[in-house]
Length: 332
Image (cartoon, rainbow, N blue to C red; front, side, top):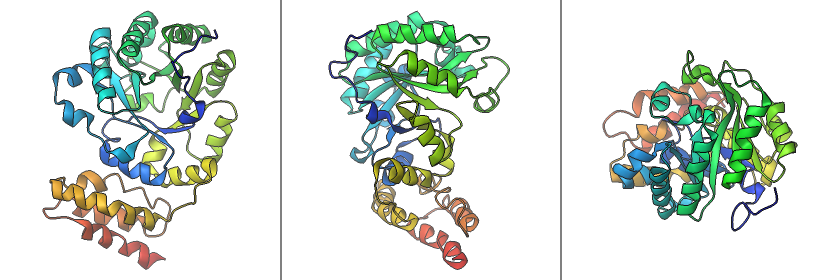
């Protein structure tokens, strides 16, 4: 297949490094912090359902800062018209990409007929993608699994991918695990089904015109570099959240960006924190994303303890973050 997927073909390098959409984690404060660590990584919102966006508080759901770009809005849904309107709202708000969730296995998501259960319905996903692409001028991408339940045959993933290509999808992010729709929690679905990286590598070989990024179980610079020898991109999930400084190390390894000190990152975050506090944002909503910054460093436990115990208190401000640095200084 050689036809153009977008009016302007997406550069694979734009998806070389990204941070996965993670419910309850990748809010705007998290994304701003991650951007300080990696100027190049593509960032994703938490999943927003199309129904919530079309009928809900759009300004709150779509809020993001200029510094976050490139940033993508992830949508969940299965009604083409509603998804098209949600995509239009996202693009109008300035998002650089609209991503459709075809990978979340939670019962709540399944009951709404979206997420991973849609891998059983590639034709419906194609209809959704076409409607979204007709509504916006930014890339519409898909994040999926390698299969669901008893879909052990590569042919199932192959057929899904062919259908996505025919619908105009140019970028596919693949979580290299199956999802079990019954019997496993979302957390268990991130850990129990075995990883199958070779299946994703085969997909790229057979669909070279498709930008393919991989997600799942990748936790080190060396593992990222190994995947990039086979694929166009790597999407980090929990590793980027629990050890956010990994993003800075990857930024240096992949793009040659000088490695910032952890303390320097915090200093650059200070104006944002102080501005948010003036807006009425509670400190705890920001500091919860900082807990892993000193992962593996002497004094890191004390840093986490001070923030965890104090950030929720009335009047907590930047001084608490400075106080949290004391155990690190003492351990140095």
